[in-house]
Length: 156
Image (cartoon, rainbow, N blue to C red; front, side, top):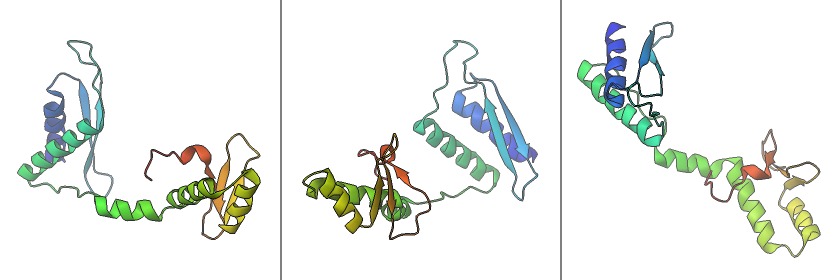
């Protein structure tokens, strides 16, 4: 436990350059020893805030893996590869609903035509509430999906 705590301490110290106050708590209550890090996000000298973003998370992972390897501790593998994520993305319900909705929009003449074709594509659309909701009747979906969750920019 002391070694794991030291790895956590060195990781945060290197990541922040020692400018931010932090606490490293090492837990041994599970079948694996792990750290929880509490970071004061305000720099103690300049009052600037630590910006936590994807780059900071990536740097944390790289520093932690490097220090763990030196100490001989276990390095946590990535949960999913990019290829596995792509397979998941194309098999989830939001992606399929989005494909059907965009097909309906492109191939419908008016609103009534869209609703009629939606039934033919096994897509139940409810416009009665603040957000339109979508449900695929030919799948094992358990919950409806709101229209604002089908953003054109998000790949799913």
